Image 1 (tube, one colour):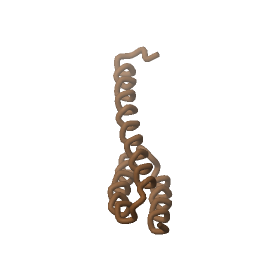
Image 2: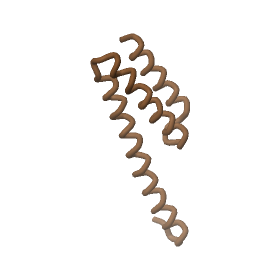
Image 3: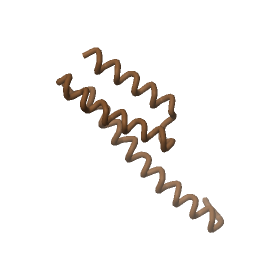
Image 4: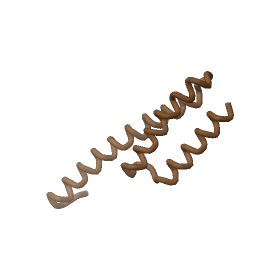
Length: 83
């Protein structure tokens, strides 16, 4: 448990950031599922740009690693272009 005033504040900030980061990561995962679950090829291509933007933002904000973002984008591109 945090003993100093500074440590208590840091714990509060970390909890707030964790919730914020989890929200954006979960939203992006749901968008990826929505993209993969879409039947129409045209609809997939339009959603792909939005999902890639979301993934790039997560990597820019250090919520996910940049290599993980790159791998996710690569896999999504392969699925959409193969369809």
